[in-house]
Length: 338
Ligand SMILES: Cc1ncc(COP(=O)(O)O)c(C=O)c1O
Image (cartoon, rainbow, N blue to C red):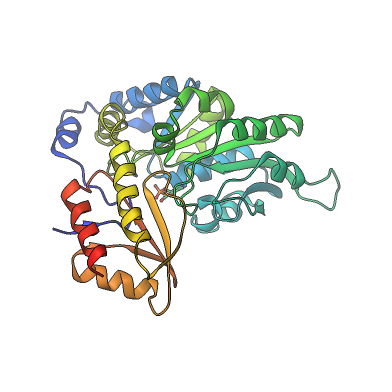
């Protein structure tokens, strides 16, 4: 039994999900003729109370398409220093959009309206034109931290006052919704565009959606094609997405409970240093010397428990659909024995 805590992208489709995929009706989506994709796009748009959505292969693509649509070359994007759009999308903001970034030092990946306000460039020919603010909820490098709705609303006010667009990287938004008892529609009202992933905590093999107004999504479809993301009979993947949205959201609470149980066991150990507060399904903690991230990960591996060293001194463990209660028990037993 391998217990894979490296990422919530490690899930394999369940039998029920595979059956839903097997039954999917498909067509050529570049022609707009895949009924399963059309259903998924409509379903998610309605779920968020937004006008339209477009199905894409990955969260990197939905984020990068959004940034491309919302900016001109030479513009500046405001985001937290740890955000995925900046750290882990291959320099895509510069590569795809020719835009620069203003990096903010928020709290566990979360920026504030004041930080945003203070970082908007003056209307001055020397300066890049600030045009977009990108938030991430939950924040991956922030250890699955969640925004308060109030702060997001304040950020939107600042955006409105300064003519800025507000994008959300919601790769793990469903974790935040479940934990903070928020609704998709609250997010749909605030953001100009939202990216959601089906292939993280929701357990799908592939897929992300970008949501926004009709004219924005029309433009996004064009960029998706240019980026090589126009897919054909991809309704099989959309069917997995529909299955996940209907069945796998409520259960995220279990992942959060598992993460908290493991975190409690870790906190009791002398070799564990600072741990980020565990709000959802991600545990990030530091090791005290002589332990390093590498030595702990290697130790866990000997017992078929896989973690991810995210820096020389920090390990990340992520709970997800394929982590069962016996796996959590096994992990806690091992931690207690170290
Ligand atoms: C916060 C966040 N945004 C975006 C992505 C990108 O998703 P994908 O791997 O589907 O490109 C990830 C991937 O882990 C992520 O954690």
